[in-house]
Amino acid sequence: MTDTGISESIKNQVLELGRNARKASRALMGWTADEKNRALNAMADALEHNTPQIQKANSADVTEARENGLTDAMVDRLVLNDDRMAAMIRGLRDIAELPDPVGRVLKSWEKENGLLLKKIAVPIGVIGMIYESRPNVTADAAALCLKASNAIILRGGSEALRSNQAIAEALQKGGRGAGLPEHAIQLVPVRDREAVHALITMDKYVDVIIPRGGEGLIRAVAENATVPVLKHYEGICHVYVDGTADPVKAWSIVENAKCQRPGVCNAAETLLVDSGLDADWLVKMADILEARGVELRGDDRARNIVDSMKPATEKDWRTEYLDLILSVRVVDGIEQAVEHINTYGSGHSDAIVTDDPEKQDYFGRMVDSAAVYINTSTRFTDGAEFGMGAEIGISTDRLHARGPVALEELTTYKYVVTGDGQIKE
Image 1 (tube, one colour):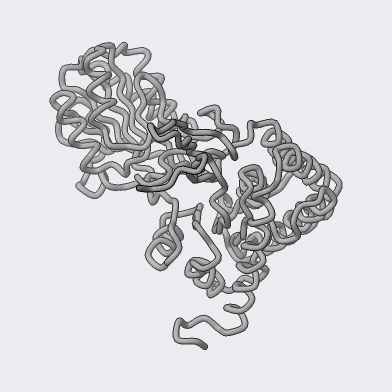
Image 2: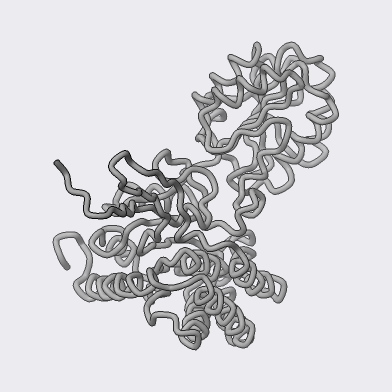
């Protein structure tokens, strides 16, 4: 073992992936939009042609996952049925139809001395993707990175290794037929966790790491990486219902934000209710949520209105349940609601329901989150829902990317300065 605890064989194996990815990324810098789109469609064709082999590999992963005692929810994320295979193939073709994010002139201006400056979108270079469970991420991430002219090194969860290998092999085969650089898409081929540490500390060859999975995985990556990380830890999302809110609209938004898919990062975890709202609104809201199987945990003021609520603790305000549980607090106006969100929230997605334009503006300016919603559900924080096509993840960071990380966020920029013999005096 080396001083870092990584065996020499794994370290060298991952270093080779990095060197090859860097070389491929240089080649991709010169690729045109048409070349990338042809490769993406060829990769989609290869996935379609190799569907039986991919599903056979996936079946072996699913069997092993059940034998190892993975939960039904985890197993469900792993399964590649016909519908999910079709969606994965369609996703590549959809990405091929999106505008090329590379080469966009973000800004241009001319100086008094005649110099013409252009700020131009360019690839980041090499992306390291670390993810759990869902093998469709292998295809989604590879396609997005290719469209943005980046090379990618994929490290999926050990529970999906066979599935990920089969998908990656199909993508590589299809890409090669369209002239894709040999190492533009690579998969870490071992289950050892040492490989993750090698990848996230390989700053000579990897430009950014994107972890996608549970909080434990993301924190482990962020705390040990020497490569920059695009991430979000949790989705502690709020809906604040103001005293001026349309009651029916508010019932619908809260129900959707909590119940439509409770196990995802943009589902609501806390409901804040203005004390100026009629108490009957919260009684009806509780009836709606409890009928959907939601357990409510309220502060004293909320429980005085709905006594079936369990008492909320300080821990509840800081918890991402990812389940049919909702904490409820009654607040005295929008300032207290915003203070609660900025104190306990994770900076992901937060919503207000109000008919007051001034309060809409205040909430939009003062809530410090990646996505702020006015009179709509938090469930829209997603690249596809934002009209970006697909996404590779969500970021609550402040530098480079915030919110859905899609094609534009997989680029950086450089300045191109054109002159006619000017020299600095």
